[in-house]
Image (cartoon, rainbow, N blue to C red):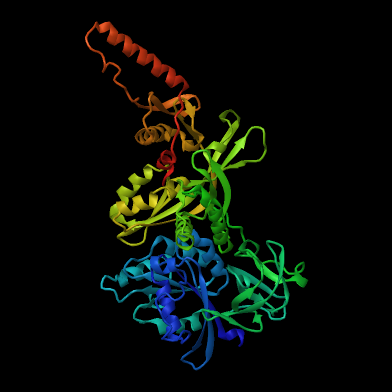
Length: 599
């Protein structure tokens, strides 16, 4: 088929604005999937996606459509994730297409992720078709949503399509608009083969499947290929397109979207955003722009509940990593919790998905510590900054010149009536207010620059509860900034417990130390001697709680006699407790650490 008859596009939207349902209607109307095989959210293949109603892994599909003018077209659709954690996947999908359907829920209006995805689309210079979805809902505010789209996109009212993914209203108009408004793909069949990897997936029979958009040339089975970013060579075992199941074909040409079975053993070697070229042209063919390595920003430790599950958990995490290049893990051990793994994630949803998949697919319920971020530390003796993943790795304060932490640009969209409450909440999070924009007379966009650690620990839940669920937020990393951070140590019976140490802002050290000491007082078992719990920064004690000792009534067996006998016994007991406190050690059960570290 000629390149003029191909249209490559994706659907971008906020979470739960109806991307997957609209994709179902497109598949149905183009006859791509037989009505008997049709089910809701067909492109969401994971159980977790079906249950949560969100897209986690993007899914491409090829559709054949006969237009009203009688011509046949091939539509290549990529259904993308909407959640903030998967923003890089969205940007790579947009790089693989010429057009995007911007979907906005008529009952919710423009949300945080709508704007972020729109910015991604504008950066990639793709044609945007705005669509107001769910217009059939009784609480749909169509005119208000149209005004918001015109405000953020600067389009005309007649360019916006009204649709319902549920009833099929407006879907044919969308298909016709794709032909008229989205340009055909550009590419040169005579140039050497060059393709963008916009996703990859591990298949136990074929190795890694690279989901690709071919920009130049063509590729056939048995040809040697080369990944530009990872410098890995391989051979094409099979290739084809998505229907949405894998359909084999003889070649993939410029302008098409399809899959290539590489035979590689890990998605690490076939990364999203990389460029595939033919091995024979690896030195002369330039890579496509826009590739960057995905770096996890949020870390948490996973520990097996039973020590004998360690090897099984390691294998399970290894299998999850085969399909997820953004997830990484490495072994670590803790005096308190034994052997476990430090795991890196894109964000909290990513963490929840890995945790849930461990539970479902491998029947492992891990013990998960509180999420943290990566700090950069400049020490006096070294020219380069060192990465610090947890407080006990922090060097001695005397050699530290500076500690930097990651910052994000945070956008919050909410009704104007919650402005005061949101500003009050953000004032507790070390945030720097930037500006306020009005989407319309009722809704605002608030922008802040905030330390990432403040965002990942409960901010989303607090925001939702404060605004009765009306607010949405989105954040993107904007780099590292120096801050006045200190290591907060916890001493129990005079001994420093490294597993309970944490990095905190200096101004919050007292508050955090006091609440941690109070929490530990409740969970540490009582001893036969008095146990002090102290929170300290350097040598300075900021907070103290004391667990009282068990007290035996040594005077119980006394009868008659002088009061001095009673005093003598009590004095003897007092000296014994003093000796015990000097030599006694407190064995902390793992429940204590869990109470302090749990999210």
